[in-house]
Structure formats: structure tokens, C-alpha cells
Length: 491
Image (cartoon, rainbow, N blue to C red; front, side, top):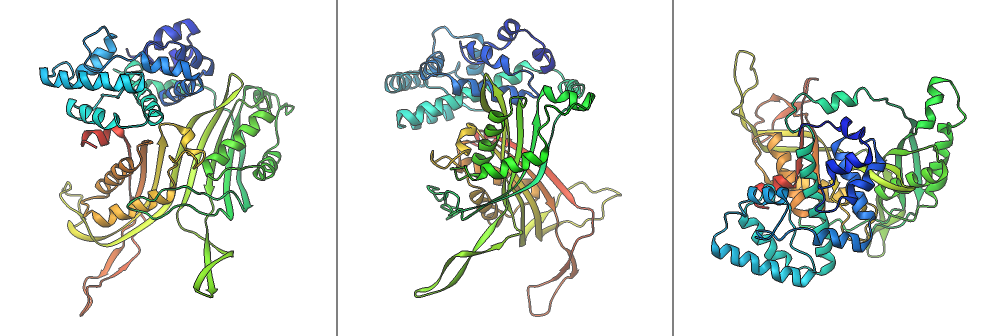
């Protein structure tokens, strides 16, 4: 269609519904309710708001949304869009036997759950779809109800991509957004040291990690908060501070309310603080808040049965740490998460051998030798988003992804893979993350190559070498992944 997001932001409600009412199958009410949250700063933002509208709907409305979806490979009437999506997955070319199998499972599924089997078919073949249907028939109603809503959200995301700038490679959305006013203010480096927070419990170990939780005796964060709201415009244009909350007051607000937080995750704390701000100050319409966990490691002391945890003395750690960023916006008087990003920051890993880099372009500018066995030292930031941001707010749902699991997945994959490049390594880390955690919707990496420079090639009677720090220029890589990447390899 080639439409820009700015055009959609300028539409009245009826035009907006006409444009996007079909994104959620036969449920124009989703677009109708999302319209009130304009303007949207990205297609991702728009998608997150629409998903939030579904989550805020009644159980009956959500069930009706699921029931509005057509049977896969059904030969009854369905929307043109659904026909195109199913055709792309080869469901219009089933053999008679495949059709009978899928029809039978569709009937069994609908009888069991009360709504048709729903899966985002983009990137999937008919074999993967049939296998998924067989597997999900064994789920409980609660698990399958949530899974179906997650698939509906993914389908909506794919459909939105077809609406905006499908044929526009000029970056029109980004250029148009650059003409919109930027206006915010806030406070950084708000250091919050809360002792004896709620313990993080209920974390299930994974094959790569034995982390099962922590006591949160020191629940410490470095907080940065930015607030937005049209009433603040006069403070910029006229010097009128009557609506301005001093940033020193923001700092004190965060510190005081840290005592009231009853949860156990960084993301939950950020959402809690944001909601408190929006409740207290009606001139604020949205909050963007980042929290970097300040890690303190428990120490051991002698006990009757050997060493035991002190429980009193901790060591400040300069190593990797969890991080998260949320945007929380007021919508119809309710605070909703409109953007989120969870992460692990400042991970540094060295593999002393078993990594290579060869086969790259060689020309008159190339001085780097090829190698199939080098030490590899990387700096790595890993971020991820959930299909349901609510899963990040506590561990009670059993779907929280701790940064410690991501850390351990990264070093296990690094150990296992004889990677031909950093690019290949981070791709496989991302695949492993999504294999372990189906609640993760997307993954993003920022990596640096800090590999040491060789000084002495051989050490007598040893496998060793001597290295020094590399020269200042360093290579870096950025990469993002979605569940489509996992689907392509049959995961």
C-alpha cells in the first residue's frame, strides 16, 4: 500500500478503522480502541498498542477474536488476506491425505478448545504446521488459549508490515518522524539500593544454566527516567515551570517508592515506578525508564559443615548485569506498556582457541591474515522482547527469562561452536535463546571484537602464546532476530 505512519497518525477514527480494522481477524474494535493512543512513533509501537488493547479486552471479546479465525486449509469462506497467508504456506496444495489429516485435527482441536487452531504461517511449510498442530493438541486449555493469542499477535504484526511502506525503500517513515517535535526531560544516575527485596523464586533451570533464582538481599539499580507530556511545552517556549516536576523531586520519588515495591524483577520495578508517576502527575502522558541492575555477589564464610553463604557481606561486581527499558503510556486512564526491551549488558567472553575467521574479501587494502584457530575476545550486549510484556514483570507466571540464563546460554554456545565469525556465533546464540524460551519474540545483539594481538607465537614446551591488548580500532556487529529465523530451520 505504501502508506506512511504519519498519514495514519493524521487520520480520524473512522478512516483509521477502515485502514486497520482487518489486522485482527474480523475484530475492528482493536483498531478502534488503539486509535486513542496516537501518535505512534513506529510500526512496532502501533503493533504493541494494538496487542495491549487485546490484552485489556474482556475474556469474551478475546475468545470471540480467536473464534473469528478460519480453519487452516479450510474450504469454507475466509478473508482474502487469510487465503493469501495460507497459500504462502502451501496449504492450498495439500494432497487429499494431508487435507484429511489436517481437517481431522482441526475438528479435534476445535472440540477440545472451543476455537480453531491458529498459527502465524509466514515462513512455515505445511509439514511444520501439521507437526505444531499435533503437539499443541496435548496442551491444557490455559496454555493453548495464551498460545493462540500470541499467534494472533504475530499474525497482526506481519499484516501491519504489509500496510506501511511496503514499496518504499527511501525511509519515509523515519524522515517524516524527524519533523515531529522531540520533547522530554528527566533524571539519570538515580542510584537505588533497596535491601531485603522480595526473593526471585520459581526459576526453572535449563540445560545451559543451573540458575534458579536469588534472594535479592541487595536489589540495586541505576535508574534513568524521561517524562513526556504536552503541558511541558510552555516550559521550553515561555519559561513557564508551573507544570514541571523538578528532576530532583523525580529522584526522591523513585527512592521513596522503591520501599513500596513488592515484586522481584527489574522490569516489574520499572513498570511499578512508571505507574506511580502517571498516577501522581496527570501532566505526564508517557514515561521512558531504564534500569541497570547493580550486581552484588554473595560471599562465603566458614561454617560447621564447611563454607556457607554469609548473607551479610557482598562484593560489588564490575561484570555483566541485567538491564531493561520500558515505555509506559497513559491510555484511556490506564497505564500500559507500549515498548519494552530486556537485556544483558557488558558481557565479556574470551575463548582461548577454537574460533576462526577466513574466506573474507582480500584486495589491496587487506593486511589481516586468515586463521582457523584464534583466541576470540568479545564484548556483547544482548536484548530481547517478549510476546507478552507482562511476562517480564514477575516470576509468578513461570515465563520470566532471567538474564543469568541468557548469560549462560551465550557462554555454552561459545564453547560448543567452532565459529567462522562473530556474526555466526551470535546467530546461534539467538537461535538457542528462542529454542529455550518460546515467550521471547525477538532478540537483538551488539557485539565488539576485542581479540588480543599476538606478540609471541610459540612458547617452548607449551601450547601457550603471549598476547597484548589490540590496537584501538575495533570491529563491531549488530544483528536482530525473530521467531521467523527459528522457523526457517524447522525449530
